[in-house]
Amino acid sequence: MLKLPFLFSNDLVVGIDIGSHAVKVCELERHGHGYGIVALGGAVLPDGAVRDGALVNAKMVADVVLALLSNLKIKKKKVGISISGYSVIVKKISLATMDEKRLESYILAEAEQYIPFDIDDVYMDFQDMKTSSAGHGHTEVVLVAAKKEVVDGFTAMLEGIGLVPAIVDIDGFALENAHEVIGRDVNDVVFVNIGAAKISVSIISGGISVAARDIPVGSRQLTERIQDLLDVEFDEAEAIKLGAQRVQEREDDIAAIYSSVCGQWVVEIKKMIDLYRVNHPGQPLRRLSLSGGGSKVVGLDDFLRMETGLEVDIFNPLAEMDFNAKKIDPDYVQAIGREMAIASGIAIRSSAI
Ligand SMILES: Nc1ncnc2c1ncn2[C@@H]1O[C@H](COP(=O)(O)OP(=O)(O)OP(=O)(O)O)[C@@H](O)[C@H]1O
Ligand SMILES: [Mg+2]
Image (cartoon, rainbow, N blue to C red; front, top):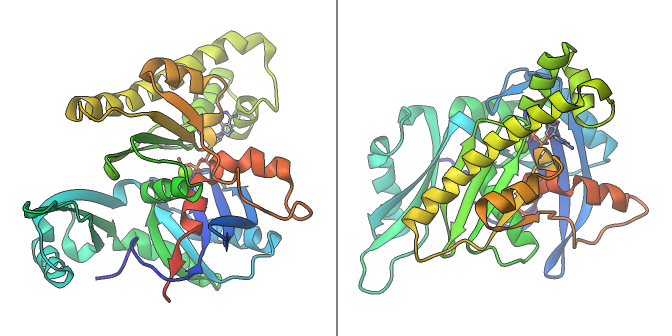
């Protein structure tokens, strides 16, 4: 059984978040009870190099990762990545309490019934959440299975450029961990990370993760719709979306695209929250924490606040971290914070190898 996300030791890895749009890299170090930023950066990937959470063109991705690490002068070789999408299953199961060894052999023997993949094709890991109270013989166990083919694709790509992939995390877990970095109370919170191709939603309630799902929509949809509307190349549509280029005469049509696409995002996010509310009537959510590049759409936070009735915070894991302002521009730290949610969550992981 390969240890996936629940490993522990002292040496922090460099967090590398390989999204479908961009690679984000974050190196942190422990500062007292908190963390300091050592290095930080992002680089856009060639279109199509990563799709559905898997490498499509490993060479292109390797080149971008290598150039980014070299620009950032990162010397450390131990890195952590995180995976997401169709190749990962996270499942919560309720089992009779048993010790770690018995639990491991039980899960190895019974995993087939919980996982929709062939067991030989996946890496598995589990964690006993130890939710059993005295006199109650059941505990919640979180089971993670990740397709070997996809994980091996990432690790081989990293090894090919001289790195040591020491941690393979899951986007949703990294997002949850990142919130613990800033020491804020993360209970009864819904985390929403809006990327280019997916929105990761995860809900922490009563101290544990009760729901985590990737919704296959994201900011790339906006670019594609603008591309169709104006009959321009993808890169030009992206520039228009980011406000780097203006198309005055079509502004109303572009605004209509925003309200339709972002409206769909909000509907999907709200569905998960509503389902949670039905199943946990006694445990209300307190706030929604928003991150990811796609969350930069102006007014989206207010829209979510209105539709969900929750307080909405923009999550910046770096906001309170120390760093050397001679090496890292404070404006950049502020601007990139929300895109760094997952990379920073990986960067606080340590590796035993
Ligand atoms: N101001 C903005 N308005 C709308 N979208 C934006 C803005 N700024 C960045 N984005 C979009 O955010 C996306 C990049 O965000 P992020 O780096 O979180 O995605 P990713 O991790 O690469 O994608 P995914 O996780 O979905 O594979 C791109 O689609 C980019 O166009
Ligand atoms: Mg992402």
